Image 1 (cartoon, one colour):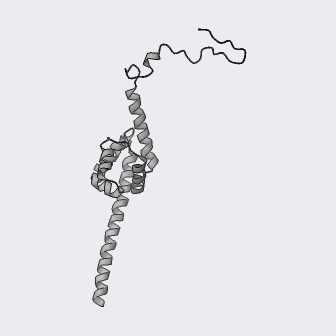
Image 2 (cartoon, one colour):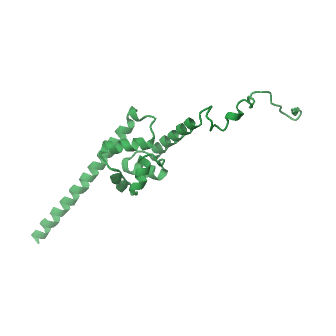
Image 3 (cartoon, helix red, strand yellow):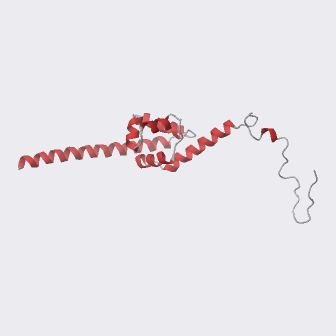
Length: 155
């Protein structure tokens, strides 16, 4: 009987040690990620780049992150390699893992998307849908008839 109690105590202590080290590692990772995100060198960067930097800093593989998030490694790889945007699903899972709000990840994705669209549609670009109409458009402040007695302009 005493031997069984010693055996059970040993395994309970061993299991508790594993759980505590996992908790310490998760808390440490969460603090490191928040410290990384607060730094000025990541300002204006896309969330995929920030996620890749966090993986390098924590010495985690894409497989480790996928396992922690409960996702397939291909899904994580597509986000980290910038083939796919940061989705709300991934953002919420990162929030649960590292305590960084999902909105933070999505705001950065929106800013990155807007900057990318603006760069693609720069004035003078042949793909600019408004370029051919620029000289033909009237300024908005021209005299615009108003009220019931306003005269309708003739063309």
